[in-house]
Length: 214
Figure 1: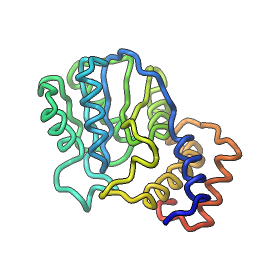
Figure 2: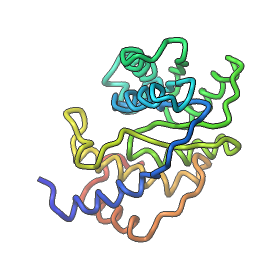
Figure 3: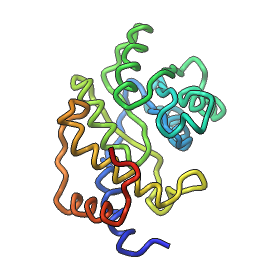
Figure 4: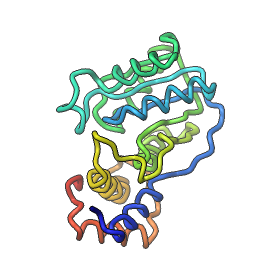
């Protein structure tokens, strides 16, 4: 059982990782692959609601899925979307990328190969990956307009049988570390981290939530 203090610290990181963008009609929906199939469902829902005319799934097998699945994330996600009623001809698949930077770069190659040049994107990711996805996309494609969204779940609702509450905290801590250090490596744009958010990160590290640190 997690303590109230740990839950409060985790909530602070969860809230920071969310961008709370308001969706607008866009040229395409780009769903970034992961171990969370609810991300695929969110992307399909947005297409079916008419937010964009094309739906792109990007993802091969990454750090968390290479030991879980045989099929690439994008292929698995596309199957979910089609089962929800998205027509096959509206779907584009990039199934070689292994990280967020490759998601962006390989998707651009896919679009170019199909003669597509979208200017506005809705990017769909896990809730605690919103900020990192935005920062990575804007590093590689600063000329494009971007909104980020994720499955509409609270921190309490997010854990399931595939990912425990404690694992979510480990990953959020690792992602916040990357928000801080990746701009220097050229992987992401710089984003300000409020002092209280960083203090929460440091407390969680002290409590042992370190398994996803680089």
